Length: 164
Ligand SMILES: [Mg+2]
Image 1 (cartoon, helix red, strand yellow):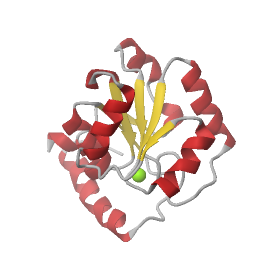
Image 2 (cartoon, helix red, strand yellow):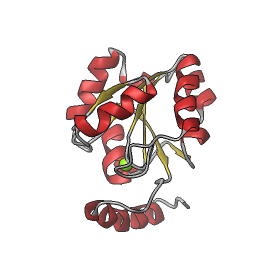
Image 3 (cartoon, protein in one colour):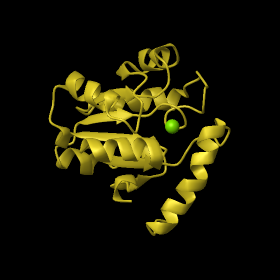
Image 4 (cartoon, protein in one colour):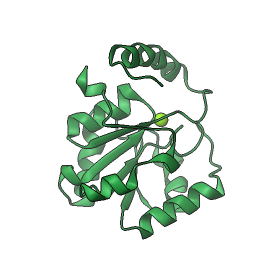
């Protein structure tokens, strides 16, 4: 079960413990897209989110998207945010995580993965040896498979004694 356990909990991107991460030398941040950066399948990125990405880059973090979604979906988001992306990551499998490590060209200890799902994002990051941070999903209007995952997530949170 520990492969699903996040290292940190945050409400949303704005709530991420950036100072703490930086002190630990974690300066490479990977982001899930759907329901972490934008609502599921939405292309509209709030202005404050775009600003947050620019400010976080300026603070010395290197930022990249790690999404299971297609390049078609992810590239416009990455472009708007001015960051790199890895699409079709197949989280929780390691395909995308390995591509991200190669892209950063940095040790896994310096990388954190931020996402809204335990079964895909947190498992992927934990297996890869990254620091993992779970955020609350932006929008409950999701794919049926995600909704199905959520039932397991509720159970996992309860088993891990984490209140969300
Ligand atoms: Mg997601």
